[in-house]
Length: 314
Image 1 (cartoon, helix red, strand yellow):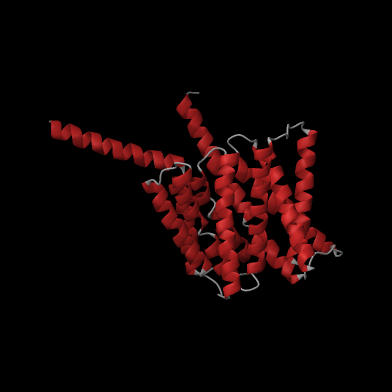
Image 2 (image 1 turned 45 degrees about the vertical axis):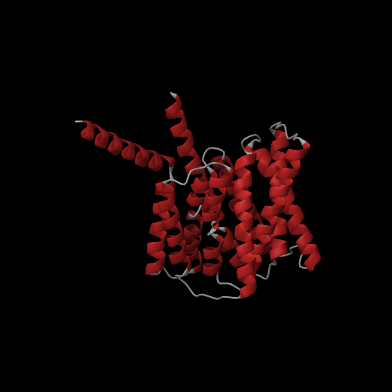
């Protein structure tokens, strides 16, 4: 296998990992809705979620003999990203008290634009034509999907989810930097420590943290831990190690599509024309953002320029 073939395989696998991870992250909204129906607080749901995920991941690393030692500055950066991710999780879930899920999703998923711009400035990742088109398709698709249901709006919720979007931008960009030198699972393990600290402190500070007693509560915590946290975090982190942060952020906009589909199947939410068209636009953004598409466009432009040059010479 030559270098280019190996790179192609790596980027394809990276996109696939992020798409699957995003699909699993898309179950979070469903778990959140179910938690509210049984009276489970945000702090209890997220506290149980990240305590269990952290314990499982660290136990796995110990069993497999991973070297988890980090330099002090690297350790501080990893825990800092965990604090950022923890803030994002709390802010997003709490915003749903004021916003409909559609509006919250729309605002949260403006982060691909932020990641693309930040990556272009700080990580020297070019904003190519396919990537720009993918951004437009992704944001347009999310807007249609988000507007496909009942809309509720409250300024506190808008501020919270806007802050969550900014935090997600910081986390995605920082993760791209960290996984260049830290193994993805080790990175995720340290991030989980930071997230757990934020969630528990929030629950204690607000007096909303409690120990679940009902089997349904424990079932929701188990589901959100495995399906909505451990698996997608590992997949997303592994995929981000193979593709640029800006590409990963665009591809991951398939997450709200998953939420909508699950809402239709599990919660009997309606499928509107806006949701159908928006879903198609999101899928198109995934294709446009793939490295294979970018390379095909670049090769086409180069051939056009070469043909034009040869024609003028003739």
